[in-house]
Length: 191
View (tube, helix red, strand yellow):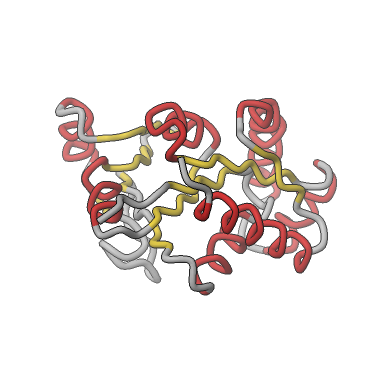
């Protein structure tokens, strides 16, 4: 059986990557979501092994020391996220394609590790102003948190040229259609 490929989506918070990834998972592309590990506690709506693999900070660092992560990062002070190699290989060995919803540094690192077996897509918001509007429209974060996310987004946008392709997130239907096209072409292309 041929091993699956990897499709990496990275974007600043609020650019639409989760919406795109959820849409693609509903299509019949043989995609399976790579569940990340985190050192933070689960939110009341989250399930271990479905939303994340929730690890204690000590467990997380033990896996780092054992080189069990494909990539990992301390995203916020004391809160780490990472992609377990075992999770990716579990999916690939079934012949499914792995789809990622990761931060930009993680996306770049996964692409470097898997090279031509991976397609790295950066989802770019139309503007920082539009991104701020989207984050405010969620009504989930304080003004201070939104300011931090926007600052981080400005920094993350500088990484866009390191991705295989940039997907502009403007009109949702068009963005989803473009994402489908990119994924279909990549999956069907013979290395």
